[in-house]
Image (tube, rainbow, N blue to C red; front, side):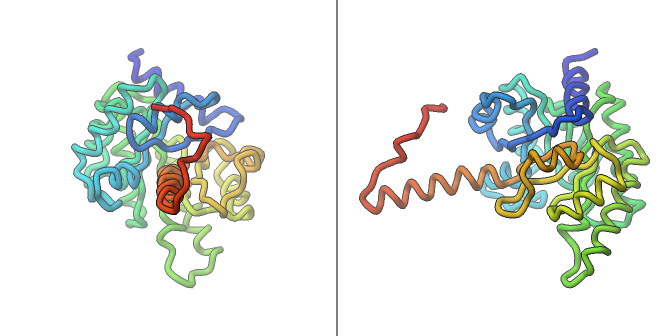
Length: 261
């Protein structure tokens, strides 16, 4: 088994374990090092939004794929842990982008459906999984994302949004996706319904400040994984902006600042 295949299997096993996999997203090498150094960290996730913002691009495949992959490759080469990449909608070719992500050292990836027609979205999931097998990484952890909640029409009945999410997730699981990602599904009743309909250990969520349930509760509900998307970068930027404001107001930098780089 190759090193990448072994890392992919490790990442897959972490999703299947009864313990919740918590991924604090890292957007560059130094943030990945800081996250990896925290006791209990088992893998590194990269956010498309965070990497794009690092280079001054908006989210939504606005950053050139080569530049995006270069940062993922730098992170994967620097940390020993499995790395999973957010390759958004697949940059027009989910299979090819999966191959390139694996070549960059990623052993998992988020693929969002953008609420495209279900048949088209299922085909993209199949293409990604097939590409991973052909690359010799059959355990590649494709996190098939539905945007049922993120792109729900204004005023839509939440029950309809939930039903759409479940329908799409079931379709992705049926063609082999190991886990399914439902961002912005944060209400307890929605999380409970997703796990009930899809199964324990397959639902992944994003932690949203002031909105999401605590990780200990998500674990008890049977969620497989929770990641942080752009929010860990926003935590860092909030600290930076607050420290700057304190200095400009005549104060000092936070005394508890640690030499992490």
